[in-house]
Image (cartoon, rainbow, N blue to C red; front, side):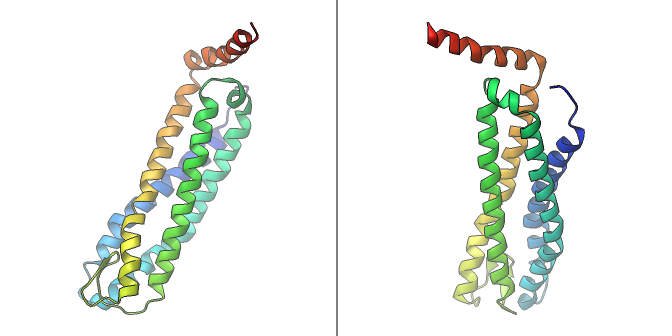
Length: 189
């Protein structure tokens, strides 16, 4: 660790914080508030309008997180290659990020389908009513489950970031770095 990585670490952390917080606030706040409208045929429109306002900010947050993550990976490539455990957590972080990106894209597609449905009566953004069309109801049921996947995956990313931070402690870094050559020497004998 030859230098400070304040900017890329901030991009990583702030982007992830906004991605996590926005998805959680949307599932609880935007979708929940839409269900309060007295006009059942306006509920999808209001929820989709709220999500449409959030989407550009979410894209920026995800972009900041990805840029920060890539910068941290590049800045710490030596530790990733040599320190025990860092490579594994880096692979885990990459997998979780890919899954969160996929879930985000999937919920976006479902949201677009609902946005194009028009003024359909619903109980809430993810709750069909008895008179909701079958296609919209099916999409709502998918979205009801999928909306919670993003905060779960991004919360897991927060935990992995914490593990990465702990792995940078001198008490963790030196033994972790020395363990790999020790294993290699042991394999040669």
